[in-house]
Length: 393
Image (cartoon, rainbow, N blue to C red; front, side, top):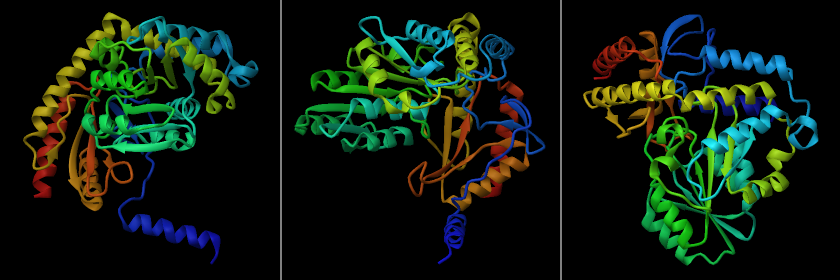
């Protein structure tokens, strides 16, 4: 069979199952109010939780970084591409973090996906068992596979099963891996329980706090919120969500980070991110820690409380989340797509989330809240929810 014809058939099958993904084109900066595909919309789709992506201070910092360091890094971190801006942002992130008994060290990455691949593939190998929450992000799953370690999946948030798996494990090395805030449900990992298990069973604990950094723990993340400290901890954060820029980081004991510099192939064999990005991230970290950052977190908390209340009054099943991720489980792919289109017709951008991002039969609408949303935006969302709910009935 013709190669292109085979791919076309497979794409048609994806389409028929209601699983085809289509990109939308934003004509304006990421914000609560955007122009997308030539239309004005209120965006409830991005992960810009603090509304910093279009913040004038960060735009100016990006421009300043480009003027100072140029447009690109020119090489990998170990072959000429590591600038003063990269060093500075790592120092800023390490100083801002919590959860470590001694002074930690940070390592800056171009993306969160790369950070997770690098961390797991460098710390785990054939002599390792990785214990992974069933709802972990795809980048953690792929990092575990890349490591070639044995993988045991425990039911979502099930600490009893995890303890039984750890107790029975005879591997030389063990890694427990979990999201901090789960990206499709918005619920939180039990950090204190995970730390206790990691220390009791002499395991590394990798927490991917992509959706918690900048928000929880006064911006320092879920580990700071849980008030735990452990040398077994490796903390991953993303800088393209609440921080409003791009990139990611791993923070751990300095020995762990030095090992990653020496052995993490996704870090070693890629061109460093533009220094201007690192320069802007440093400005973002300072803003997150500032009084303005605290004000934005308070504004977001009020919006979360209001949306939680309004979702309980819809005809769908909301997932109980106290974070900026608010999801309504619809079930079928086609019904979820139809509802997303109904919201879009009212100028409300709420994305449809379908397998394999979520389990089969749990397709959903995922509402992402931002400190940039105002009361009028939430009024529009509430009116659209009632209108679309009547349409669905």
